Length: 291
Image (tube, rainbow, N blue to C red; front, side, top):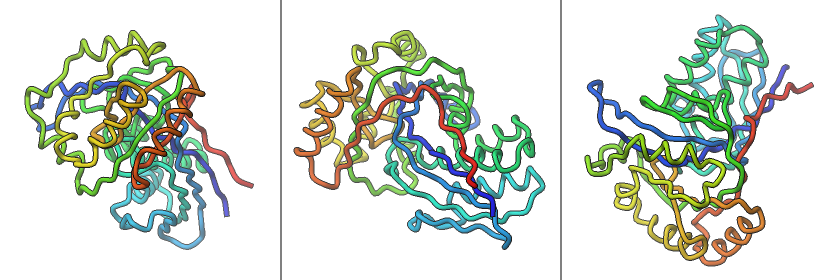
């Protein structure tokens, strides 16, 4: 039995501008995404018996799991049999706006590439990732990128330094992203200039605002979000929304300050609010072949 282990990182949206709705029904966006060292750990084994088994994600039905869809899509393109066991150790909260599902799917593509080098062309990998989620291609090969179009057009950027402290309030919302898009108003839309300003300040993120077009809608849709934003404001003086939420975060250049913020938040928030401190990654994780 052959196996691969890979860390699937979370991401933070450093600002997110929704520019408007396209004729095809999708929304045009402009955002900067950056990987952080909050990981799910995924181990993929090729096995003899046909089929897919996934452990560690019992709350997600097998056939709707992006991991399963990624394996089936990759094997179809490679012309190889579907015969894999996947073990997942979850650390990324879900749903949160931290990209956990898309990161898991991209990790599967990278793991299968390591098991079968050159079996699937790079452009086919990218198209598979884009079919699984708009932010999935980002997780294939960039620690930081500006994403435009529907989120799949990527311009690689230098990774920011520093740390983030994240609060994920409790949320129970089916089809979260669709619900948030449905709650948008034209007055929520942002501009390219907002993201331009963020890109020009990637080395000093703790000194600028990080606007997100989903903010008003998220505050309406997630009742528990206000508790998180008030707590983060009291400790860090500011907060920003990641993705469509409900995760909120603040940036600091200091590891010591990040850990102080985390400790303070952990004492003031109810236990159902997850609090994490994480640093920005300079490089994306790579698969490790197992003996």
